[in-house]
Length: 66
Image 1: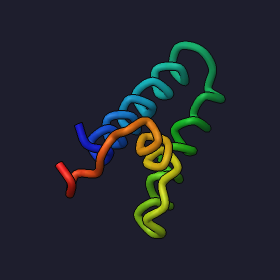
Image 2 (image 1 turned 90 degrees about the vertical axis):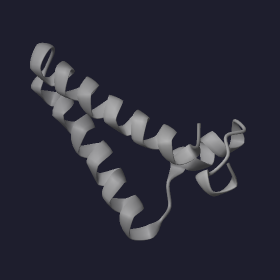
Image 3 (image 1 turned 60 degrees about the vertical axis):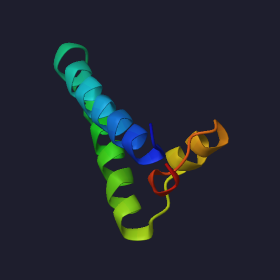
């Protein structure tokens, strides 16, 4: 699995989890959804992703090298 696929899977999972927590636990969990969305927007603008750095340290490779 590439870093890019792992980031999309993680971001999608976090959005779904935060929406479930918002519905079932507390409306304040909507801030997690906003945080994930803001990070995705920031990545689109700056090409900087902290999750990609973390995954690279764990040994995952970018899609272009697979």
